[in-house]
Image (tube, rainbow, N blue to C red; front, top):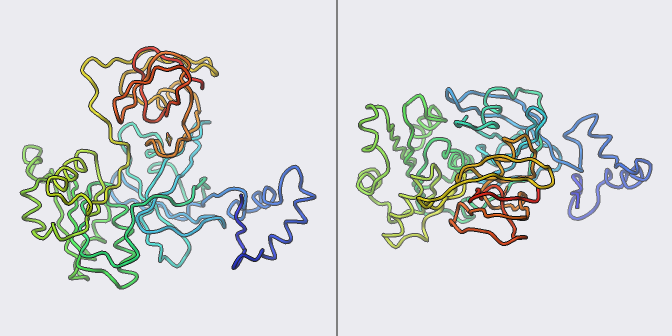
Amino acid sequence: MQKDPGATQGKPSLWSAITLVTDYFAWPLRTSHYVELVNPLWASHSLQARVEKVWDETKDARTLTLRPGVNWRGHRAGQHARLGLPIAGMHYTRTYTISSAPERDDRCITITVKAVAGGRMSHHLVRNVKPGDYLPLGLPQGEFYLPDAQPVKPLFITAGSGITPAMSMLRGLIAQQRLPDTAHIHYAPHEFDVIFGVELRAMAAAHPRYQLRLQLTRELGAAHAAARHFSPAQLEVLCPDWREREVYACGPQSLLEAVELHWQQAGLSRRLHVERFRAAYAEAPADAVGGMVRFGKSKVEALADHRTPLLRVAEDAGMNPPHGCRMGICHTCNTRLLGGCVRDLRSGKLLNEVGAIVQTCVCAAAGDCELDL
Ligand code: FES
């Protein structure tokens, strides 16, 4: 059901009353489809955002300031939203954390994207998107946010672009003037790789309650990198009162696994909140093999290894399969298995029953297989 952007307290707005009449003449389309031609942000049947500004945070990370259309509803600090992007005739969707605070008063949001190796969309967003472009946008989602009640002494543990949800939360707490005693351990390879580096240091200087512990893992060369990564001993030094804190962690899989294990062994898992950028994968068996993947409806075949998600295999073969989160949450990518065998990369479980639902973003070939795509 479409939201009425102008509605207040359950009463339809003047605009919705007008469109009730004009929709009759616009049939089989709706008034919103014509309004969209004038300004895509005014459309009520879809949600788009206009790129207002681009800002390079580091050599491979860029912040985009987006002005969402009338259907946007505010986010909570730490939430993410889906962003669409047409590239070379294909439509891609990815999920990005909103890095701005909900308290921004210009109705804009920011996302901060790091170009990742082999990441089509991240490279496009970092290198090619420019002010004035319009991008399809989803509504804010996710449960990685601070509680309404004041969090007791939060500890943020972040690495790389995993800083984005923490940044939204920190900016929000500062804007609300209720920043509690906050510790923040952030990992980046070098000083020049620290996303929001200048702002983080300024926050630390301006707010004595915010303790920033920057760990530059490669500053002393690759040989010393391991000593700078997360470890229980390092945590004791950087944040001795970690047991008393509510922890919000976001970063690469290796960091999150180490953090989860440590809090679990300490019996404090309930205090740990984790945000992942991709699903956690199980270890693949040593004898795992890929195979020939046949996409039945499209009559496309592609050779795949045992680790590459079938969604990516389809896209690399020139297809444009439906997808959303790409991490096994939204089920937009679901299809049916028509034959053969696939492996769920999260659990390692094999699926070989004809008709079984396959989430292509988190399943890979386990031998030859055929999908209803
Ligand atoms: S794209 Fe969301 S579950 Fe696969």
